[in-house]
Length: 450
Ligand SMILES: Cc1cc2nc3c(=O)[nH]c(=O)nc-3n(C[C@H](O)[C@H](O)[C@H](O)COP(=O)(O)OP(=O)(O)OC[C@H]3O[C@@H](n4cnc5c(N)ncnc54)[C@H](O)[C@@H]3O)c2cc1C
Image (tube, rainbow, N blue to C red; front, side):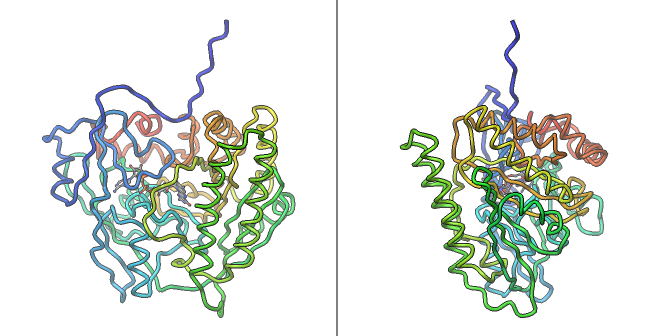
């Protein structure tokens, strides 16, 4: 008899002593927690807002260091355009404080409840205009870090290679305690929107990905629709009004997921349910994108800036070479329709895509070699999701997708290592020097980084 196939979803469940959580509110407490003499149970994992989609921020035994108590904005230098914050500051709080001084983050980053530490220790991607804005971590000038040995270490741009290792280091080299970032004066961009079929989008996708525009799009494979959001800096773009962007964010990330969760409960006939969901999504995108938001900036266009509890959305994100995306997007449509036919599963929310510029500022940059398109598959439909993301990972492998260790579910260890090539080997050597006993390594991260 054939043995049942084990399908690895990327979630680790180890039944052992319960996990301890420490929430330091100052540097001294953080150093004490990491000090080997304090004998906190290992492995130690670091958690910001906990919004990552994989077990990179989780432990089923050992210790979690919750950084959200380290939430001071230490200094905003409006003259030199820099800011210094503790790692647990929420992006929303930082965006608000910067806006009061006429400043904004470089790059448009959603998900305002996440922490600055989490957003620079893992890829923080968004609809960014320009090559310098691939990740928030690109803007890091210096860091203060508490190492696995409980020692305080400062890393600045003078130690280029070390700083490049700490950007996007997933908490494997130490706990980032304090961050200095480059920011900039608020600049208004124009936003134009189109609704296209997948084939028409495929015709223009590679050309768009090569241009210096902010590209975000929503794909609805089952009704053959792509909603395109293109952002450009113009010499006279007009005024940006926050209200339209707030309604857009509320419609897309609050109303639709809530309504869909209810529909999943009350409507038993899939064909009726999905027809209704697709019509609601199309109407929301048609209304909010084309009518309400024409101009924006990185403050107004970041959605809700009040801290909001992360919604239980299911997500898995893979990145594809921008130069191949015309082919990949058509294959994705086929993958989704085939999966529905074969397993009955489909996602209910649109997948969201972003263009990510080439970026060599970090050793573990997913777009180190070329510009990529990140495709974030999202759903509220739990039944069948775990199998779906395994098939999605296989699809991504077939199309040369690059995984993100905090956002791609079901990454095969060998494939993850292969895609990051010798850079991963270099990072692993550095990790072993800074954490020789693997105190910061949980079983999930050990698959790729041991
Ligand atoms: C609904 C939803 C939407 C999302 N949308 C986006 C999106 O548009 N763009 C995007 O890029 N991501 C998105 N994500 C993914 C997620 O928000 C990012 O991975 C985020 O950057 C993680 O920040 P966090 O504070 O939640 O960190 P966590 O999830 O807690 O941690 C992420 C990683 O960083 C490490 N880490 C955290 N803090 C520190 C620290 N102080 N020192 C060292 N290491 C640390 C952790 O160990 C872990 O490896 C989304 C997630 C959800 C649930």
